[in-house]
Image (cartoon, rainbow, N blue to C red; front, top):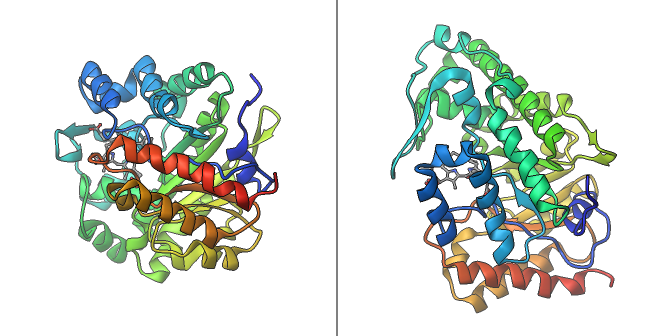
Amino acid sequence: MSELKNDRFLRALARESVDVTPVWMMRQAGRYLPEYRATRAKAGDFMSLCMNTELACEVTLQPLDRYPIDAAILFSDILTIPDAMGLGLYFETGEGPRFKKSVNSVADMDALDVINPEADLGYVMDAVRMIRRELNGRVPLIGFSGSPWTLATYIVEGGSSKDYRKTKTFMYNEPEAFTRLLNKLADSVALYLNAQIKAGAQAVQIFDSWGGALSHQAYLDFSLAPMQRIVNQLITEHDGRKVPVIMFTKGGGQWLNAMADTGVQALGLDWTTDIGNARAQVGDRVALQGNMDPAILNAKPERIREEVGYILSRFGKGNGHVFNLGHGVTPEIDPDNVGAFFQAVHELSAEYHEN
Ligand code: CP3
């Protein structure tokens, strides 16, 4: 494997010194970029794009060709796992994800099996291998998966949801059966992430997008516990390098200590948490990733730059910060504003590092 030309991202996750704060953006390959929309149109639809190795590789690299980004993220989706479980994922234009099969009973859930990623998700591993080859050491590649809780909400609701009513009813009425489902999802995620690592992913992120919708105890039992089960099974080193794990619970600001106790290397923060307070809580146990409100990308470039400066000042001097948004970039954002964001992170962060 080729040497990394830019290892800021991995150094920051290991809380080692860097020249400037590394930055990437959740959903950096996506609809805000005209070149992404063109490639998706060529593929036909979103899932066809994910399954086409060349085109998935192409869209992964598109933001890197435009901006000074310090990491690439595999182009895929968290819902590939429920799809591999046989639920039949499809996307209705403008409607979000849907499943052909619905899950309505304990029997339906117990019928779902742990996936075999090499057999069922070979297209993802092919994309990882091709992206690594095409990156040729430019920046590290991030692999990812959804958390068991977040995946369970899509499986039980049959798509996106505002209140997770069906999932929570099931969780409260049938906690043992729900835990069996979460454990199968955790084992599937662990196999999936390990396969991505073996194919070439140099760091992995667990997207617990909806963990923040849970009560305190429900978060610990039904979101954090299955994520711990994943972390316990992950390969910690590949190709002579440590493979860091980033745990991102959106709305998870009150559980940072518990998250750090899982043994992951970094925590993702949404914008509702002050990154200075977060750092004071977790100390030098984990690196922190985040956490600008993606809505600020709609403001003028000077305001974006000011916010970047503010977040950098709240983290302060020293190691262990990866700059990011607090959630994914949205489709209406002006690509020039994204450029102002990336540029501001590198320019304004130099003074926080010893050069
Ligand atoms: O970050 C990246 O650039 C990598 C690619 C990536 C996608 N989805 C591409 C995508 C990643 C990391 C994801 C993760 C994902 N998918 C999450 C967790 C992250 C988060 O936002 O909290 C979730 C909840 C999903 C499920 C999902 N996928 C939904 C709800 C939707 C529809 C909503 C929407 O944004 O349209 C998707 C589709 C999807 N996944 C798109 C992209 C670029 C848009 C599809 C399109 O091109 O039309």
